[in-house]
Length: 334
Ligand SMILES: NC(=O)c1ccc[n+]([C@@H]2O[C@H](COP(=O)([O-])OP(=O)(O)OC[C@H]3O[C@@H](n4cnc5c(N)ncnc54)[C@H](OP(=O)(O)O)[C@@H]3O)[C@@H](O)[C@H]2O)c1
Image (cartoon, rainbow, N blue to C red):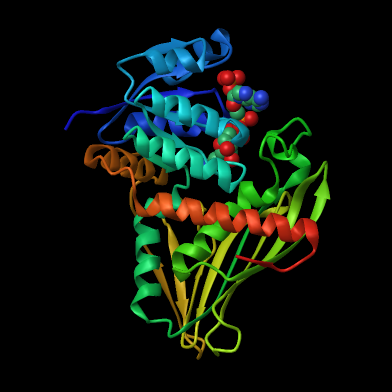
């Protein structure tokens, strides 16, 4: 199979992590880096050994040798550049959150599908061997009937300057879209349902949520089977990234689901009700490579509609509802 040749749009901080991994992924090749500044593109190209530079994002889309673009731009620019890339026939690996709201997301999905190109969001952990092992255990019934999922993603806000995109609502900032995206996505994926109701409260700064606590309720409250997911996202607390899935018989805990603390030892635990726990270590490729290779596989299969994209759409739908709830103080029905 031929390599998928990537161009990166923007010399973002996260692009510095992804660029070497595009190069080391099987079936992928890093062809070019585009920036609003020729100088930034040159510097990036030199540091990461990228053959071509483009002094605008549009120039990368004009290059017939580019098969796919990686879009690590602020969320406010995801729709515009995904649509332009799709119109130019380029497949799109777009950073999370896919967009600022469900209208932008729906539009991105339909434009990509109309142009026959693949769209995938930049959540890496879904594509790892460890995530597959977690999902297998949750789906197997080993935990018993599922009751609750709790997840947390925080880091210290005082390391983040006000000019950072995360502190600006118009750019798509806020802890919900930046970090809660992973928590909501984990709940929807692992519980495999859409919630009927959500509720959230937030601490605000510059009109963005710098901390959010949310509730998601799945199913009828009178059925005796209603599941609950809760999450915490924040820019103001020590770095944490854990998830717990709770069943009637056992629970599963992963203390670093979005990125393993030790890359050579990705782990999680299952606990029974008698104090016995089992540690599961599931080593595999780096999660960036897992994502890039999953994307390339979708491209080779020509699969423009796929489960990950539907999960992104649902994640955006639920994040919109959580934002509405946090701003209004009301429980929001989906
Ligand atoms: N998957 C992950 O693990 C992960 C981790 C971190 C971030 N992210 C996501 O990646 C995206 C970028 O985050 P980041 O923190 O890496 O961003 P960043 O360092 O602020 O970079 C964003 C890039 O976008 C370009 N840009 C174009 N217009 C801009 C504008 N008006 N303001 C700011 N930048 C502009 C700039 O590139 P040029 O100047 O070169 O054109 C800039 O370097 C976000 O969606 C974020 O949520 C994902």
